[in-house]
Image 1 (tube, rainbow, N blue to C red):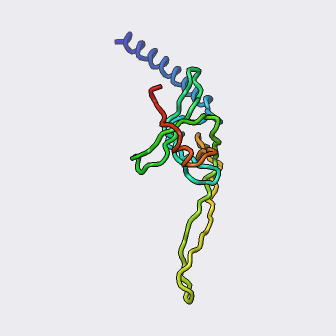
Image 2: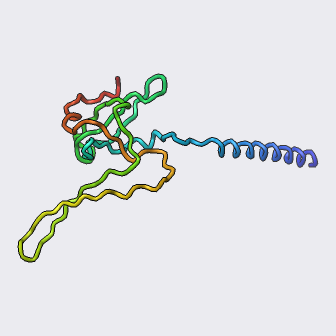
Image 3: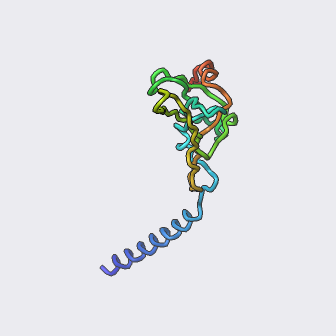
Length: 156
């Protein structure tokens, strides 16, 4: 019985030492400046006129482990009729701030009938949070240019 208690105490001491060492290592291992690849999937892609042109469907790595191409889903509605195209990862510009949105409102003055007014509002900038992914990507292309590109073949 005494042998079992000593063995249990020794095992508990070893386990607690390795747990302490593991905690100190994980606290020091930070990913400052790194992005989570899983957070880039479904990220919106805009053109330089702040028009949404698609969203990221897949990240394609080369054999060296670097992202070579990005598959972007263009067009369609709720995934139906969507066209996936591949662009070079380096062609995308990554932006941390939200896209300025344009909203259209209708006003009805008392004497002149209905008029349309357009108001441009910028989304509030994010606080300096510690996110591990950008807000969106920007690609210098139009939706029509992307639709004209060949369908991306995931099997090649």
